[in-house]
Length: 137
Ligand code: ZN
Image: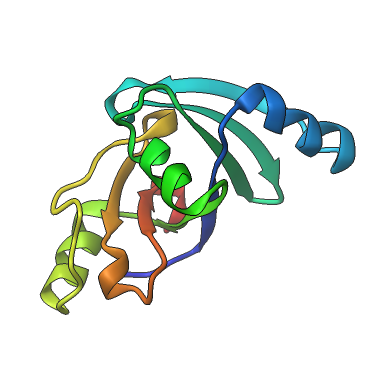
């Protein structure tokens, strides 16, 4: 497994509408996409920073893991996503090395990418996402 770069940083927010102006008006970034990921009960907003994205995550339901996160820890950094060329292989390799996997097999995340999460218990408390992009070879 080889990580090419940080694909994105996921940030939990209560409201995209309230959060986006900070990134646009203060930091001068441009929101280029807003997408609902029904599977994860979140609405996402994306900003490009070099080759890394900021992914804002707003819960669309009380049952969303993002809602639970905000309830427990408040708004803030939720996860970090590393880019690999093959998520299935990376998850298998990490599982074999003893990392606890939230996803044993990749699933579809925002932007249609294959993604899988590692459990924070195995990663020093950082919820870690493996994100596949074929061009990250
Ligand atoms: Zn993510």
